[in-house]
Image (tube, rainbow, N blue to C red; front, side, top):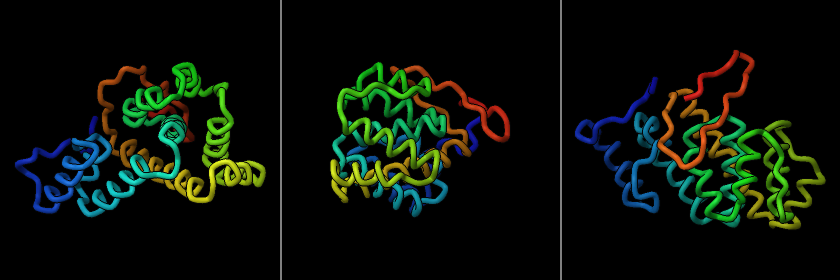
Length: 194
């Protein structure tokens, strides 16, 4: 059950309307599911929206690497909304459908290029060990540069934040051209797949 469902536009407060219209009139063109639960805190939604807009549209990372990082966060959190939105975008940006299928299944894809392997390893280490080894860090700095590495860290953090919000709010995913993620077990049992 959607714990924080859409608020009808006629019921928006002035603050909700102001921040929602910035999203609608920006590059996203619509008030997408990640922002629906955040409508309850319009100022937080506004700040989050600006960070997300930078990371999606102005990051030092190439688009396909940004989309790959987003998929790795979505898989880690079994975040159906982000997966439904970003798996097709990742394929459009140059991540192979077989790599997307491998990620969905929890397998390590065979990437044809070093930068995708590097982003995969960086994100997986960061999410599973809460750190990045010197070897992977140094390789990322050498291959991508410091600004792109900081943007990669920002991408993982931002999409982790959105995943937590939508998982807790049980935000339902939109229709998508890709299958939903299989559920993962957690320390508190099998979580509902939304």
